[in-house]
Amino acid sequence: MANPPPPLARRIELGALLRTYRERAGLEVGEVAEALGWTYVQKVGLMESGKRKLAPLEVNALLDLYELGTEERERVVELGKEARKRDAGPAFAADWAQTYLALEVAASHLKFYAEELLPGLLQTEDYARAILEEGRSLTPREIDRAVARRAERQHRLTEPNAPRVTVVLSESVLRRGVGGPEVRRGQLDYLRKLTDLPNFAVHVLPFSAGAHLALGTSFTLLHLGDPVVTFAYIEALTDSDFLDRPPHTEVYILAFDRAHRAALPRAESLEMLDQAKF
Image (tube, rainbow, N blue to C red; front, side, top):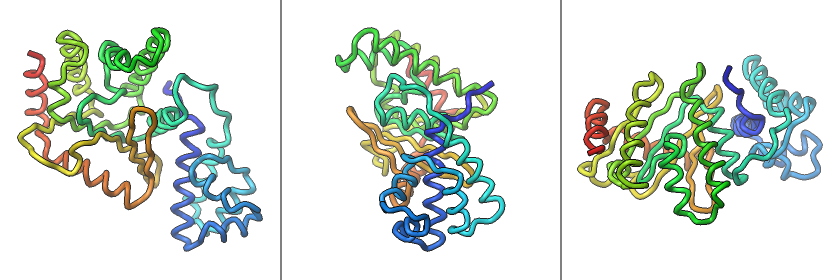
């Protein structure tokens, strides 16, 4: 049986949903804080960013304040129950990385645009190890744990409730010799096998496509919940950024859609994957 999304993911999803309902109701954060009897207005921001758990009475007060319908109320109440559960113990990951991993588990659709390297979720152990060893900041034991963690995450791709995964790869991802010829070939073989999954699609964006909106960056779009909440995730060397509201998310959605349209169709993408192994 698949593991349920962690409480952290549900808190983030709930917070984003409640912010949407607040804005729809035309209320400012100060008005919400006053209505709930909160001394500190900042509590509203903490709630909407998923950094604060809500008691059942607070959830009910928000339901009334935002004048939600029956289906919306039921959704918020259920999310609130899941969000109040205790989080698991600390994992081998920075706080920002743990947030991403929680959202990855909860997502119903993952969209990756990769400019130079494959996303961690799609990496073989050898490919991941070659990247992590270049950092020279982790001990061998820490690298082993990080590699094992990436391999564990891949089980999600074949679970009964597996998310849809859409990947747009710049041609440079296929050409970069990470770890040497054998590691690179093994990675491409693994990626090719993933394309046999019904929920998995890979499209290659060739150099011949020229300039496009996503050029020069890599990012992930995570769609979760009903109604859908979209997060754009951008990772750097030492931290990351989560964007969860327009106009930021709209720019990344547009960038992905344009890259997707400019990429090769499935058959030609698979042919390029096969050719890149030699």
